[in-house]
Image (cartoon, rainbow, N blue to C red; front, side, top):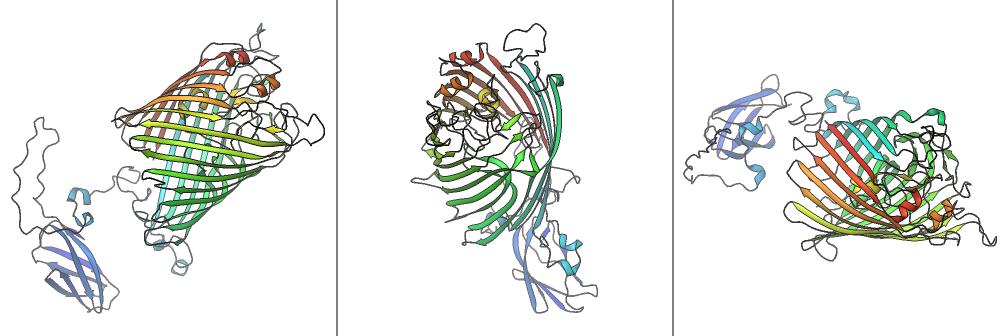
Length: 640
């Protein structure tokens, strides 16, 4: 209860019988009244009270309830104009010996202009709004009494968060593009044609999140979330047979899809201690990243996850299983009704303040089983098995063990990861059948990956330096696959989505695979990151990175990155292209990106970037050109 003047009228309602005595106590003061016929009571309070917070006890018959009474008398908050060029400060108020001591900051009465603030409309994103979880939805008030105890989310602490996002992307780039047997430009005799490409993609995202519980200090008790995504994309290239195998389909493609991208139920199983340690599960289509930077598995897909923490949140854990859905070729969204026969199990453990305060260590194990299958994508291109070498259906089993760390040692920020993978591929298309015809066609997998980034915070600047290494296979036919590949990675490393090499997929011309897939640092030579199978006979990569993150203003952040990239091994590429003496050097990747929030909130976000790849000798050997490749994009995100 709040008042800004004395005397004032207190009112309330009760289930007690009319005429029941009501007594109100505030400190030593007391007031009395009776319950009226309509079940309400009121009393005119005249006892003097100073500004502050009081425990108010209300007794109705034999029952008693204590509430918080906040008093903020007018005239005690001197304000000054917000447009005065020369500020004028009022004389300080003399100390008042009768000021009341507050036991904690939650009992301090906010000024009236904060307590009385209300939304300016149903769709006001800044002030309190029931649609974004500021107030409980009170479904109990709209549900028949016979069903209130049977349905979920009937309590007074159930909330609804509706989110609408418009995500618009415009992208222009140059990539090596073969001209094919039916070149778009008559008279083109060179193998590589015009390299200009353009992309427009529009996503409209609608999400409803209903949860129950006081989430200020503890996790939700239960939760349901649904997210629908509608995608429209348009791609323009300069050569035929790039977007569709049929050259008659031309050089442009417009496509769209609506997908149920998230649908999960979450429930807290039990509390594990007085400090809000808990154990919960989540089932359904849900997002999950298995490590800090998304090196091994980062996806939104169908699965079950058991998770929680203990020891006052010092330790966290996840046990997850995913039976992955197929993804749409052109939008990357999930296909709700189609499983892809790839299953992933993950167990990880986070240990905060490991060895020293401020550093978190993670240990994890992943297991992936990808069954043999035959799959053509929506554009009519074979993606499983990869259309290269011995293109027969095959299964892949791989187990990843590793560790990752994130934290700081003094002023130095440390971010690192180390993984090893072992397993079996029943028939790798690049390795092919066993040439000795003695040990079967399967290849054993044994590969590794390491990453390290060091950074230093100086005011609004963060310079950083790091490296990324993935082993390559120097003997593709020796029945051991030594090239490292992930399950479904999304690495936020070495410039992330601003980097040319990380952001753009570069196809390996003359084959059905890519040198590197979009959104990956690994030159895995897959047919498709979304729909293809992991391939462990690949060249691997050696990448050195330097960069600078600059918080130019609270609204504007810039990211500058330079990467030097080499292949760890070139033999898999030489075998696929039937070409010898390819150099290891891919080149230098330079990029700059900016993120601008004009209203200091996430309601409007503008993200833009530009990058250039300066080809090295190896890139020139593969693509017959040392001309720089360019990329620029603009991403506009509007969110309610």
